[in-house]
Image (cartoon, rainbow, N blue to C red):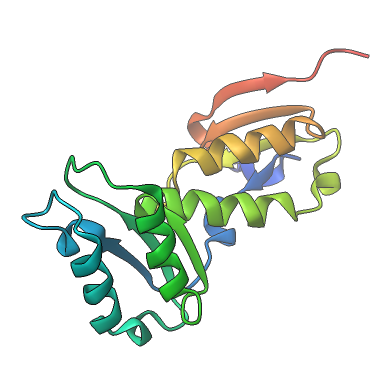
Amino acid sequence: MEEIENKVANSVLEVFDLEDYYPKGFRAQIDISQWLLEGFLLKEKDFREHLKNHDWSQYQDQYVAINCSTDAIVPAWASILVAIQLAPFAKKIVNGTIEDLDSALYEEILSKIDYSAYENKPVIIKGCSKKPVPTRAYILAAHHLQAFARSIMYGEACSAVPLYKSPKK
């Protein structure tokens, strides 16, 4: 009987797994609408009073996204004021959703990686993840890898989708 060969294990294919770079830490979302009159109207005096009485220490060493879940028109200074209150406690603060927060974290992390190890190699960006890796992170990874990789695929080695092949030199 002929031995079964694992072609994936024996290939030169490099796997780039974004889960390996997932930043550890708790993520929190602050919804400004909780401090608006009926969730829609910002009354500056009341808003400032709510911020003054809020326990900001609960966000110690957390990643925090600030948003407004209602269709309220909130002046820019309101989010800035919330961020200023958070600054002594939070690791990172962004305006937006948790996905926006994760995208910002990945942008920082992926910009610091040395991609030269992928020089002229076929690379697969691992697609399935147990962690909430935002689509933006995949796009950023592909962008960085494109300058080095011979080819880029997405998914799993057994069912990869080709994305990029460097031009012949």
